[in-house]
Amino acid sequence: MPTSPDDVSRLLLPVEIIEKIVTETWLSPMSNGERTSLFVSLCLVNHTWLETFVRIFLKDVHILSPSFAERYIALFREKSRDETDEAYLLSGISATANRACRTITFRIEQDLANPSFTAPTRNSRLANNGHAPADTISDLLHTISSLNYLPNLRHVTVEYVNGSFDDLFDHARLLSFPSQVTHLSLNYLHPKQKPSDRLSFPLWKMPNVRTLCLSGMPTAYVTALIATCPNINHLELADIPTSPDLKPLPMGIFSFRLMDPRVLPKKDGEKSRSESVQWGIQVALEAGLFSKTNTSEMKPRLVLRSRLQKASDCKEIKKLCDRYGVEFVSCSSSS
Image 1 (cartoon, rainbow, N blue to C red):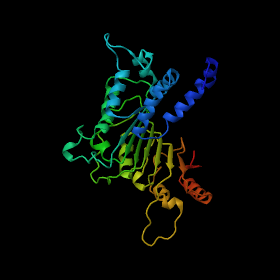
Image 2: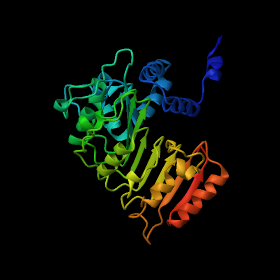
Image 3: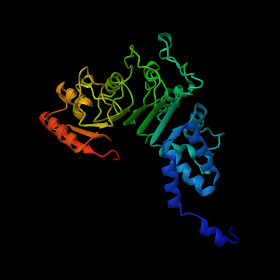
Image 4: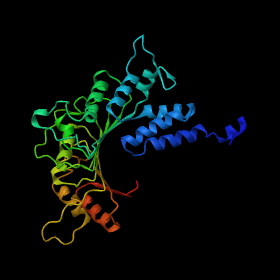
């Protein structure tokens, strides 16, 4: 146990080390409950840890609950003369929070023991009367967009855990999407509901989105989301089979990343097949996946990452891409 100020000072970590620890911990994947506990813990260590964490939190915001979203709005909204513009040991908190934010992540979790997240009916479309955490997406994005808050926000991520594929479309969660955001990520983790056969056509466009990253959803939903982003340059699909239904990709796309693509089911009587066939790459290229993007001005690029790929597979896929005028890049699963 330290007995003097010098002993205490030797136990203190440099601010740079504290910042690295807090950043890596805060940005790690975890549940909303785990992140809430982390939030509270980091605020209670001491003033140095609190000041460090607040800077990181205000830059990379995670919305943990509807009440948390309300408290976050209270931080960045303009204050009246009678209100105190101070929080977390920071004065002028509204201006600081407005300038600092670069990313916002929504994680919508369904409790399987108490499944309140039910598939919406036709009469409930566009009505924010469903799952309260999911309502937070549309409510917060509308506040940011309509009142021109968070001018440096560039990346929005939405994660559905054990949730519905249809919620995003049936409730138009992205209808009021902030124009300053250029990167959108949508991830479905352990979806329990089967894809709908009545997919709602999106009622919105996000023309400022340049990078679209999609994970764990059926191809029909991928196609619908691509249609909402007419100006994307980079498309990334993870845990999604490549499909001829995606063709043709929009003209502006010059980078198409496939991350651990889902293996397509075998056809009757099919014994062995190449990786390009089982991942759907061959049939998608033959169907004209890059027919619009393949111009003399810029050669489209297909980037593949898979834990299953072998050197022989890469050679075969490269030859296939060369045939269709597509640059092929293979990267390791850890990149």
